[in-house]
Amino acid sequence: MKIVGVIPARYASVRFPGKPLAPLAGKAMILHVLDAASAARRLDRALVATDDERIARAVREAGGEAVLTSRDAESGTDRLAEAARSVPADVYVNIQGDEPLMSPENIDRAVETLLAAPGRDIATLAVAMPAPEAPDPNVVKVAVAKDGRALYFSRAPVPYPRQGEPAYRKHLGIYAYRAAALARIAALPPSPLERTESLEQLRWLEGGHTIWVGEAAADSIGVDTPADLARAELLMKKEAVS
Image (cartoon, rainbow, N blue to C red):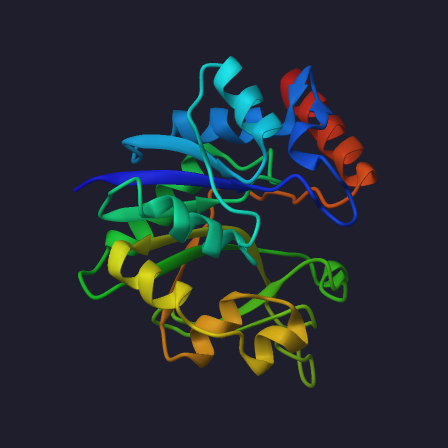
């Protein structure tokens, strides 16, 4: 079985243009993500899929692999599906290019969650989160069934605390897909819930697909703004000292 990690990266971010190439602890942010993917035990290959020659060049100059994709991809999954047409594999792992603190063990756990049963087609990760962080719409929450299936993803606090203290689960932006499932979800049209919450995984749930949720080994943060980048650098420095 061949397992390939793909890091989608686009240059034209609305809130943070050129984000993948933003300097972080001495090198471009995208290279930190590629380092994590390259260190994962369960991946046979790791590469960056990008729409911009500047990102591809930075990756290649650092000794990594990059493939160029079109500028028309609407999501990271769409970009990954395009790259998959020229990079054959049995399983693909979508590793977000704006999560420089994603650990190699998390990547391995996403793969292991997918491969835990033959019928699983899509897997992701979540981690427990403190209740005070739940109202933040930039932190995606997931409600999980007892057997590990994702019931719903939301920017709102789910479950709603009508009684008692809910156990919130923070969703981490990493997915593992079997090749056939990736092709099917990439062909789905945008859905009402996806448009409402701006979360592409809701398109898959609405389309009848099951997403299995594993336990993350460590938390991670997404970088959407320069302020997020500064926070990531501070966390990296703390980890280096500890």
